[in-house]
Image 1 (tube, rainbow, N blue to C red):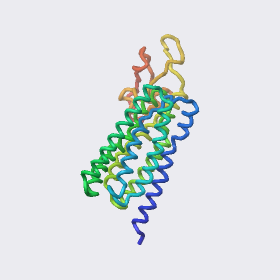
Image 2: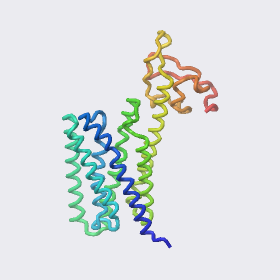
Image 3: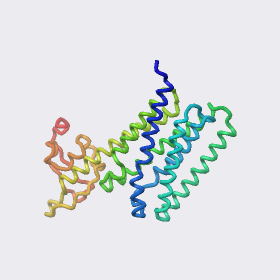
Image 4: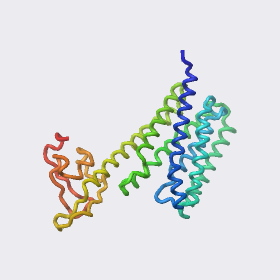
Amino acid sequence: MVNTGVIRTVVGIIGNVISFCLFTSPIPTFVKICKQRAVEDFKPDPYVATLLNCALWSFYGLPVVRPDNILVVTINGTGFFIELAYVAIFLVFSPPSKRKKIIIAVMIETIFFLIIVIITLRVLHTTKERSMLVGMLSIIFNVIMYTSPLTVMRMVIRTKSVKYMPFYLSLANFCNGLIWVIYALLKFDPFILIEISPILRIIILQICSSGRKQESFKALDTCGSIGNPEAGHQGSYLHLLMCQWPPTMKLLRPSLAVCPDWHPSIASLRWTGNLDNILVSLVSDSANAT
């Protein structure tokens, strides 16, 4: 019979490797920031959130809090220092207003973490009580860490570029979460399992959103621009945000809403003087056609 502990260790090592790759994946971005000496539109939110998340999970994995979780300590301890380096780069190359916000956020996180450590070690006396407190807090901040990239979606939509939310990075996060689910199930750890479950759904949302935007933006570039036919103008008028189509367009893929020739369900695009309110006329059998 195969030893479950050995399998769990192997899975944990695989999780460590994938997590390390994810932690180091932003390095090209920060090399670019250092060369340009500017953070551009990149946001520090995910890195500041991950900093506290790694600190909490490192503390959670210690024997005095949750025994037999040394692999949780190794990867999150490593991740903490990597994220600390990222935040330091943001501090160096951010404008004064953004730098002040980062400093305040890191100070609040530091004070909060120290309070949690003191309460855990001084007030709670069993590993069950300690793991309950630190585990619940770790779950909360882990979800915050994975939802923080969702703030970038507005940037993706505005710029019509997915460079701020790479598809394959979201996919790698999904695989990483799946590995840690297996790790938590092999020797049941409710806190690791609970914190991963909603994260998998969030990552799926990121993957689907990034994939749809890549397809939609490609369709925009392929189709070109829609002008004002009444004024006799052509081009330079199409600046549509794919998320702003009316609810009826849910019958079709967003990319099909760009060119009327691409789909028989779209009869015409009628200019209304406001690009945000372009009306799409559908033939009666649009629901059946899709």
